[in-house]
Each structure stands twice: as C-alpha cells, then as structure tokens.
Image (cartoon, rainbow, N blue to C red):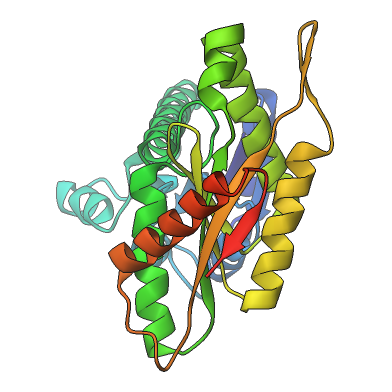
Length: 301
C-alpha cells in the first residue's frame, strides 16, 4: 500500500520514509502541502497520508480541508503529525478532516500502531465499496446472462425516448426471441436452456456496437435499443440473427442449432409521438409477425 509523507523537514521525512518502508509500505514523499496536493490529484494516488501540520505553501490543516472538499466514495485516511499538545489544537486538527493524529517527536511503536489502524480502515472501506458495487450490479443485471435486467433496460428505453424527443434522432427498438426455446428445455433440460441463453447473450454483446443497449426482458426475450436509422437497424438485427444461426451452440456432447426471430420498430421524428409502451407494443407485434412468418427472420415496422 502506498503511503504519502508530507513533511517539510528533510531529516524527519527521510527517517519516516525509511521506517514505513521497513513496515512494508511504498513511501511517497512531499516537501510541502502543495506538492502533496499535486500527488493526490494524480492517477492512483496514495490513500494513507501522514501530513505535517506546519508546512510551507499549504499546511496540513489547509490540505485536510482541501482533501475533504473533494470527497469521494474511497476517501484517504489522514494522520496529522503535530508538535502541538493542546486539546484545542487536536480538536481543530480532527475537525479539519484528519482521522487521527500523532504527536511529534513521534514514537515508532505508536506511529506503527496508528498507521496499521489506518490500513485496516482503508481495507474495510475497500471491501465495503466492493460489496456496494456488486449489489448495484445485481440490482440492474440479469443473474444468468449478465445483461441488463428488465427494469434497467426499460428505464433506459424511457430515457432514450425522452432524449429523442428533446434532441431529434433515430431510435430503433427491437425484441429478439429464441425460437422453439420451450422445446429446448423440454428435450434437453433447463441446464441446456440456461447455457443457450448465456450463449445467445454473449453473441449479442460481441456483435452489437459499444453504444447499443441490450437487456434480457424476460424468459427467452431480449430487448435491444439502437440509435440508428431504419436501414442500419435492419442490417444490425439481421447480423444478430445470422450470428446466432450460423454456428451451432455446443454444450457438453450436444451441438444444437439455434435461431432467433426479431421484431423492430423505429421512432421517427417529428411525426412520431409514441411513448415507451407504444414502441414496445409495436416491436412485440413485429416479433409476432416474424414468428408467424416462419421464424428465424427480422420484421421491421
């Protein structure tokens, strides 16, 4: 773990750097608060900080204030180094944003103990952030395929329709459904069905452009949103259909040919005034037409 030592006295800074390096940290030195601030603004900055109170250009208290004004979800742990012993000064230091303080001249054992507390706190914060990120991902993504779930993709559809009305541009809404999916589950079992869903989702992701949106609407249906015109949309959905059909899915010892049907509608301004529900219904009707027309095809309206 990186540790920043901001101390204007060269001798003290050198000793502290040697000490924390011996404890297993990567020491980064700054001779004043302004240099320390520039280090903290750079990419991958230290998150454990030892800041001297009295420094030229920018002292430890002012630096604490500046750091806390730029607070993030992964804040640094700040230990303030000070020769001041008055309780009022200690309170001032902590209220400025420091997490802890060490009196100078410092005792190595005490400093190590407080630094280790800071390290544990940062590790706990990192674990908590990882859990929060995982929960946020789970809230918006389908557990099986890893695609956006129904709630998330419909929310994006709502935003895209509103954006298309404010800043006129093409928006195409497509529903893709795996053909004869029930028979796959009935013949080969639900594990095979799950494997096919994951495989189809992966091929969709590999084929779509980075700015396209795809989510699992439910069951074997996928909702896809494209910012493009009719001709481009038809080409892209045909590419999706072909990328599924042209290569069998191999699961264990079974090689299975899979196809999809796609129903697409395009939001056309200025004449188009449809809302999200109307667009979805139109795509669903086009999908129904593709199914009735023999499956493994794209119908665009």
